[in-house]
Amino acid sequence: MCGIVGYIGHREAADVVVDGLTRLEYRGYDSAGIVTADSQAQLEVVKRAGKLSILKEALKTNPLKGNIGIGHTRWATHGKPNDVNSHPHLSEDSKLAVIHNGIIENYMPLKAKLISNGHDFVSDTDTEVIVHLIEEHYQGDLVEAVQNALKEVTGAYALVVSHIDHEVIVAARATSPMVIGIGENENFVASDVPALLPYTRKVIFLHDGDMALIKKASIELSDFDGNIVEREISTIDWDAEAAEKSGYEHYMLKEIYEQPTVLQNTFGGRFAANGMDVELDLGLDPNSINRVVITAAGTAYYSGAVGEYLIEQVAKIPTEIELASEFRYRKPILDENTLCIVVSQSGETIDTLEALREAKRQGAKTLAILNVKGSSISREVDDSLYIHAGPEIGVASTKAYMAMLAAFELIAIWLGRARAELSDSVASELIQALRSTPGLVEHALEEREHIAQIAEQFKDKRDYLFLGRGINFPTALEGALKLKEISYIHAEAYATGEMKHGPIALIDENMPIVAIATASELYEKTISNIQEVKARDGIIISLANPDDEQIAIHSDHVIRVPKVHELISPMINVASLQLLAYETAHRLELDVDQPRNLAKSVTVE
Ligand code: G6P
Image (cartoon, rainbow, N blue to C red):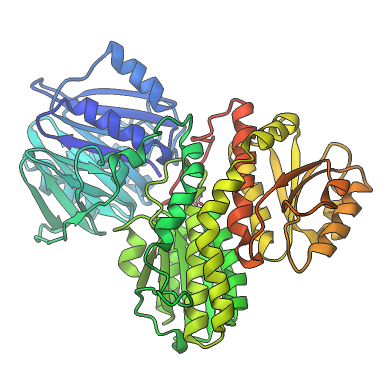
């Protein structure tokens, strides 16, 4: 959370920084700000509470000049999202500017000390202590001043520093992500790769404890004590177009429609020629484990909940799913025979990273399902399986979820085959079904107009209920989460069979209930549960297969989804629920891509 962009080179820095921030706004949008250095005696700053569009307006009347600039888009932690608390934070003489992502944990005692030393604070942020600390240590050498300041600081952060007397940007990282983009006689720094895509594909991912002295024509990396460190230069294979809306009204809609292609990319080259096996380039010995623990946050967690069903049913290994934010505090018991699978689009979610660290501390084997390369999780985990979903910009995750489901399908088959739990015939049936998913998802998305009518009809409802059973219970959970996240309608999901144990009390003629009733072992029971709702006047919106004729009798609306093997159905079913959430929020004229209070990758606990 919080997006940082820095530029030094021959272009107008403000253009590059604002452009980069536009592609990082998913990291936070409580406020935005930018500072540039030109030949003046002091830095020039513009910062505004609210979304980046407000900053862009302000820059029209007050354009910033200069070839060095740093900018920020904020997800507020310390201090309200007003103009003063917006980053960058400047020293009193406006010569020094700091932008920060993360939390300075000891900022209170530092602030007290700095105030007693005569420093005046203007904001309520933790970040401002860094400005005053660097000022205290500054004696003409900016890098040394930053190093000494950071020695006093504890917490998680990524920060960039600019000073009017130095043609450099100083960057430092402790836990929060930061990537450097290498150009020709220009260099970049950002919290995440999409900011860099139009300018360069050559990047260096900073590690924790790294500092970078970024000049126009060089980059020097060191630790916080000034010892030189070497880091690999990686090449990003995402194209610039991937981070654009490409004619769609919203990133979320574009990403929903990208899902068929994403599935092809996730599966790409991973089905063996014999049609029965999956080839994953993993170091893990599938026969060395007797238990799987999956842990993740948000949407990734729900993909793990599908993964739990898949691994138990396909590979017959006892599997549990855990919320990453609870995991290490619950004092889980793991050992070297446990495989801990962490799932994260960004690879930066702090709860998931800490859960991984806990698993490693206890000697478990670890595997990560990831989208972003070079992330913190990728560096600490034993093995990574990349989902190749491309950059996901919409804050509400869609295509990454789809690709995570695909990854779990692959893992389950891979484990099942290696452990001789999956017969040739079932394996080839599953793989054949998986191969058909890109086309089937495309088919499911053709229901958009019908789904939009349903969304229109119920957009003013205050509550929704989502019901699903078995492997589609997590689909119901994800459908409810999508609706909550972007439409702010209260939505809850229950395992259909649980409804009678409580939530049935909520049902009346005002309650829309989305019931997943696609082909499954529990289909008949699902129909009985739907009838129980109908008997209490609830509004039933069913998700059903095209050949299901009886469903219409029990439902007010039926959304048709292609029929597929039950173990694969969550991938097809979720597409319709994503559209329902999208169309509802869109009709409520809400900001679909940037829902209130959320940030895409949450790097604070
Ligand atoms: C945040 C986002 C969610 C996301 C979750 C996990 O809460 O708002 O959309 O699912 O983090 O993110 P990750 O990058 O670890 O998949």
